Image 1: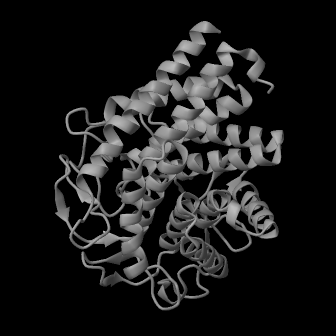
Image 2: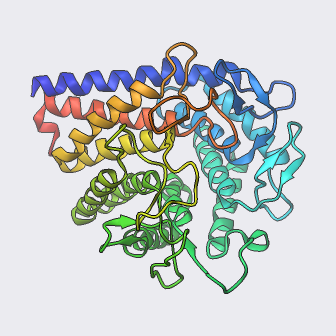
Length: 403
């Protein structure tokens, strides 16, 4: 027990130190646009800005991160001010007249890309919910709720007029939005009507665990037909192990809320099956994409190793162990931890590299861009640190296990 307590405590310290002394300072020191507002996310290895376009979903994610840290770690005024800095920019420039959040803006806030991507809305809702929790400013509450309601209105046709697919030829439903809603509804539960919360949770669990999860394959597909059937096409055969693994800690959170031990066990089993399937036995790390029939994936980056895939996997594994004591989760956690911390963090300049080739070598010397911002890593480091610390305390005091 004592040795395990020390092990978990040491792991917790690694994650917390990396968060507070490395990752967060990198963004605080380099990403603020003090002249025109919002954040720069296109940062090179040392944090220098290499492009000034602003991506609304990353702006929202960064607002959420610093508001979340203020609410959950320490009420540092610097963190709250930094979150507000991004929120002011978003409120001024981020939405069209119908309340839809754009995908990208130029530096001064002029729209570059239409609001085709509903994930801009999702992370704006998360951001303003956290800000309301921090400030009790009613404007932020209104923005968060209105945005969430707009997401629900659009969820069956999220791209709307911006959908490129020819109608009726090969209709598919995607995994990403149902997955995100499983997490978003818990983030915003304190603001939402209980009936909406329960409905969204039940629909999310059903979509993730019964529609996109294919029992015969033991895997979650990224796209299925409107009836939930398999589509033998590039999109229909696609598996994104990182998405599946991230979704499983969302499901674990819902299972914990519902006190549903069977759902918890199923989430752990799917996570382990996905990791076995997605792990690169030759070079280590988790593949980005795979074709469920073993055909060449459409995505040329299929064999890359990405930052978010690995940090989200670590959350899932340590939560799985915490909730079920399944030794497979702990063994895989140690394995994925060793790979992740050997390859992604940049000890010299701070933060993490985002993109590795299959062999584990850094592909791009950037710390942020169009897709990588200040979100997955800090969220994951904090979640892992908190769970690991709880595990350490439980090992020191077994009475806490059943508390």
